[in-house]
Image (tube, rainbow, N blue to C red; front, side):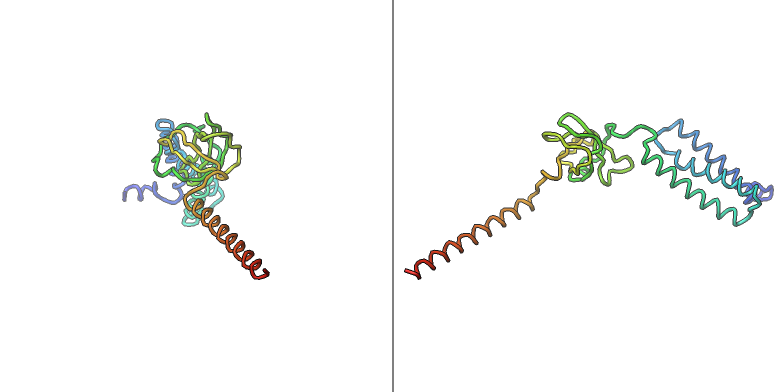
Length: 202
């Protein structure tokens, strides 16, 4: 390590070349193991390395160069992650995928492709790195943009969803039953009061 420092290979001026080399190696490793395991970090390092080379040619050196390159690494990394996540560069949206089925039940999301009893696609809130799932409905059709809830995770491969307009849980049923009881009691009290008023008149 001391020999590298004395040779000048670990100086701030060579940092852009080291980052560029590391980024290229990680990008090549992505070709061997696809799935965005290395590409986001590789792009961040390539961007920071190229930015560092431009800054070096403009005369920026030392600690200021290191600071700018750290910021460039963060910026390029965030942009690469956003690009991978939003633009589906690997074409994996909607493909069947396995997840812990217990964690999917009750999750809510939005329909991204019309859901029918035979197929469709949803984007689940908090669905992980790739939140798009193949889906089917219990009955009928759920249009694009509607809010849905997973009622049967189906092992995570194809989730069964129901429109949030139709989902009714135990609490909703209890609240509706309580409202009905109160309405019936109120109606009975009004009937009793009317009967007493008529008796008083007679």
